[in-house]
Amino acid sequence: MNRVDSAHLLRAAGSAAVFACLAGVALFSVMDVVMKMLALVIGAYNALLFRSIVGSLLSGTAMIASGNRWPPRPVLALHVRRGIVNTAMGWLFFWALTQLPLAEAIALSFVAPIIALYLAAILLGEAVGKTAILSALLGLAGVGIILSGRLSGDYQESALWGALAVIGSAVLFAYNLVLQRQLAQQAGMVEMSFFQNGMTLALLLPFLPFLAVVPLGGQWALVVGAAVLVILSQMCLAWAYARAPASRLIPLEYSAFVWASIMGWLFFAEHLSLAVVAGAAVIVAACLIAARQRPEMAAHVEADTA
Image (spheres, rainbow, N blue to C red):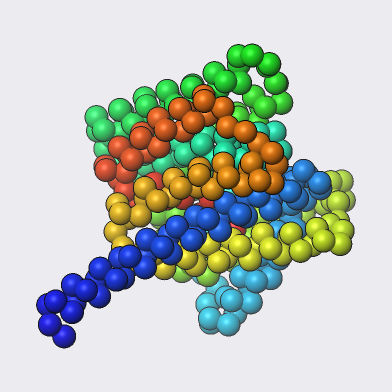
């Protein structure tokens, strides 16, 4: 194969990776719609519980089929810690979706990569430069702009709590990114998905006698659909990031805001405010600045909520 053919194949692979990344982000956005539908009807706890049941069955089957062995104790300890973090993160985010418009929740969640920079510095001893400080200040400004829309005009206390829940979820996701980096060299995607689903299920099961509401009829289709959408999205994103530089794909992750805006309007009659659009723009700019320093830390906010 000559140099021209190799260059052509590389360009083709890069273009395919871009489309795969966009597809993965879109699938995640559809999953958010499905989970919001479920959470509004049966509650965030039950939406997460029954999705984790289906997810555990699917990922467990994949783990057995792929011949994965039980991980050693240090790796298992990381799986457990990550599972606890992801469970709290997922519940906060999906509960917030019942209180906030979809696009607003997604916009606020974009601060996670910025927070991850500082957690990496604290937990992994990594340096924080001037770029990280600038991105953090911009990110806080963006959050302030969005919240200002909640604190002016018709004050809605439940929506403000929803916004705080998204920010709490973003903090936990940032910690999850650090744990993911520690696990990435020691466990495969199938193993990580199985233990994440399994840990979520194990943590939620004790509350089942008090909180469980069994999905009815078509609600089961939503549960299965949410689990399948997450897996398909993860496969698209994993395929894309294996074939193109993170710095090229990270900006595409923020297309989630566009999808959330469209589907929030279509399915929930949600309308965007100027404060949300302006705040989202500032946060995305902050994340892109952060990505120039540590592109691997700016992964999709929901990439590990399967």
